[in-house]
Image (tube, rainbow, N blue to C red; front, side, top):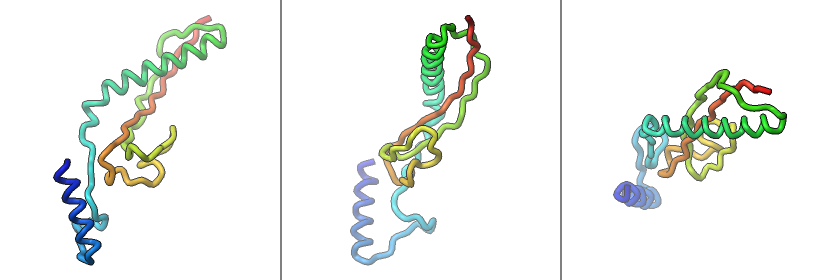
Length: 120
């Protein structure tokens, strides 16, 4: 990664000197793509399910109920954005116009929907 960053700095120097640098894709610059999503998915789903259960427990307590079994669950969509994008919950894509491929640091998130039965 250090070599890539140094090469990017050298490329910037060339551009400042008026030399056109491009890869033919029309975007220019270095692209950092995250390819480790499959390794993260199981732990992210576990955490999302745990968080959903904690939220359901709070709702149930407020209504004088208890949480029963899962009625339905949806994994949702995984999104990868630039870590500094500041994307809010519900945002799609790269989060606020920051190109995720231009950032070396990534934020990976999933929104899971879990419906529980409530028991009185």
